[in-house]
Amino acid sequence: MHTHEISNQVPDLHDYNLYRSDAALVAAVRREGAHWHDCTLASQGEALGSAEMMQLAELANRHTPVLQTHDRTGHRIDVVEFHPAWHTLLEQLRRAGLHALPWMQPGDGAHVARAAGYFLHAQIEAGSLCPTTMTFAAIPVLQQEPALFEQLRTRLFSREHDARDLPITHKRSILIGMGMTEKQGGSDVRSNTAIAMPADPLNDGRGTAYLLSGHKWFFSAPMCDAHLMLARTENGLSCFFVPRWLPDGTRNPILVQRLKDKLGNRSNSSSEIEFEEAMGIMVGADGRGITTIIEMANHTRLDCVIGSAALMRQALVQAIHHARHRSAFGRLLAEQPLMRNVLCDLALESEAATMLMLRLAHAFDAPDDPLQRAWKRIVTPAAKFWICKRALEFSGECMEVWGGNGYVETGPMARLYREAPVNSIWEGSGNVMCLDVLRAIGRETQGFQLLLQELEDAAGAHDSLAQRVNALKQMLQAPEEEREACARRLVQHLVLALQGMLMLRHAPAGSAEAFLASRGEGDGGRVYGTLAGHSLPAQQAILQRAWPG
Image: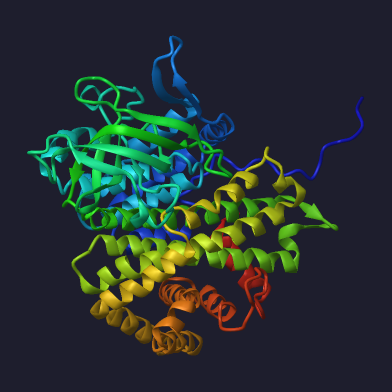
């Protein structure tokens, strides 16, 4: 029976270039030193924006990983099976070099180039980024053990994805995972109870084999070819490289108990494991495991920032696209003043996140410079706290633009919304990040003074930015316990000051002024759509910059 004509439904958004359509991203890539990667990013943006790639992302998340603990004859195998779409996504990431680009091609703008590529992929599918991030972050840790690294170098740097479950020596490329947290500790890894004993009591210490026993509560991703894990020796927590297969071709006794049934990030497998005398090679000094993995944490936290900024970008583009095609009460949503206000506010938030993300990546390209080191060590956890938090509210607001159509799983908004919380939790929750910012400020005193000076120079000609910088300085003078209790507020001031500075320097004047005015103390609150006093041409300019159309 023909009951009605279908009308006023929004067409799917696909077959567009994720890179070329993002003016803020293109400008930041060139400004931060990765102009040489521009054409490659444009090619990646074209491929990722295709209908085919978006369908692969949907399939990988709809057909989630399945654990097979035993084979038909009862032998323990601990294999996680994935939909073919998962492996196609990993092939795309590997070809783009997002697992190792700055280590394979060190030089000016290498981290910026890699961050921009990661930002593009994260807009389409986030779960496949997990093993990519962990492999990327593991490389500088593994480089601390030259003999071990030389055995792995070719396979780590390979741009080919090898999905086969085989010993490392039989593979063309490998992925590295992580196993840090335990049931009783979570972020407090110092409470770990897993133990490590020398395989040969007469030959111990870094670079030698140990036998590990214990458990890990979050072990991602279990099909990686090896994992970096923490376990306790007589000298304290140490870091170990634990392969999935032993040198003799048998399986390392790492038993996958179950896969986590997660809210989001569903294409990726996270697991609980137990192990008894699993073989691992000590990486770094005995008893200095946490120090060894600090560098790894910095890189994974940066990827959390990039990933959340990317989720915001994709949610924004979907919201604007919807508003330009959907009518209500006689007009397109995008033509209605209050909806324009919401979309403009969201666009400003997304641009500021993109700018901060690539400015941070630039700091990773110059780690010996005191100012860049301060950005890397202080601003990374600060940005991880703030941008990952903002992504939760942001994605919810964009879903609301879609109305009821945004709340169903057949559209893109539900997956973006479910994905948003993970980066705020993974690699240290909000409180952990804010306390780390305070510790970093205390340790990087010279760099932090340079960072403050940079803010003060930018604030000289702008009252609202100057007020925020002054408020930040006053909070830093508070007694230690009060400063800790207000750490979230302090970090919020720091990030908003840095974003305001970047917007003033690099965004159109109207966008920068709107961002600073709406993020001022006591002005606008945290609800999007509270911009004041902006004309129709000004709003149209903001939206056209965010998403041409």
